Length: 216
Image (cartoon, rainbow, N blue to C red):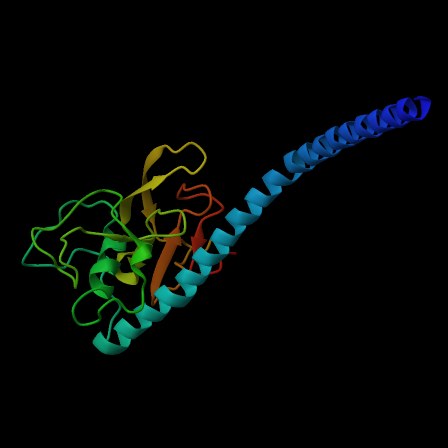
């Protein structure tokens, strides 16, 4: 009988120690999660940023080069559809990229449809692209915000763009213009074009904006 009592007591002790150990492990895991989660989230945003930069400098720049080779010029960043008026002046350059790349002549230029969105909800009277829908889509970054586009002829113009503040979810309206080198006061890519994403924060004209040119 004493042996059984001792065995039961030992088993209870082992069970008690296991519970304490389990709680200790859970506490340690909670501390580690609290420490690592912000860093893991930051890594995810960094990956999106890198993907957006690759998209701008790779796919979009390559597609613009192909249009230039075919037509002798880059797509206009101003409304140039004489047979139809622009629905509005918001996100104009980005929408002109969409109309150029997805015109019947070019058929998308290997730009995936996942990169399209209609943040201002506008549309034309009829479809001007290979798609049946008449939505006037924009070319967007990894955060679903429109990518501002300026042909060098329009570098002096300020365009209204809609974007979402990624921290607050607030819808923003911002005047965006082509960027100048502060040293020379000349425009970046003076004979070409500029592509600008509002970046991780979703706010244009801040330090984390992503572009197709290197800023000094």
